[in-house]
Image 1 (cartoon, rainbow, N blue to C red):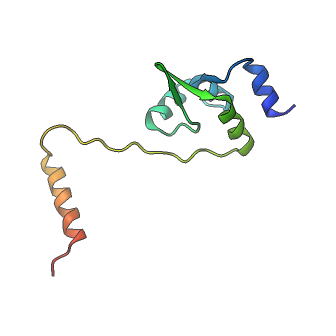
Image 2: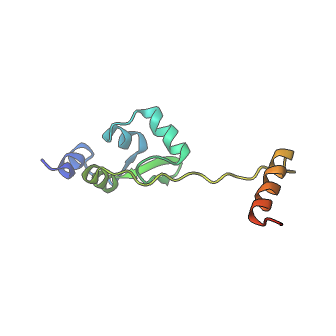
Image 3: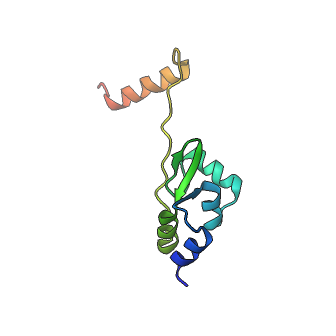
Length: 103
């Protein structure tokens, strides 16, 4: 049997399945799915449907056929509200000096 047939038989009539079910299909534990989702490193594209994280069956099939992860995406660091700390000010000043050295 082809991978497509197995996946479609396992989830009849569905186009999207939960992130945890998708993780189980590719051999990931439940908590690993949540951890990797929060870090932005889940190997499949996640779609938000209401408050649930869902994955398309076609994405799972492509992943299993190709055996490749989608490149990991790191979340951008959000700037904290309020005044920068002294350490942040020093790092910013050092970066500015390195970018524009004065002889």
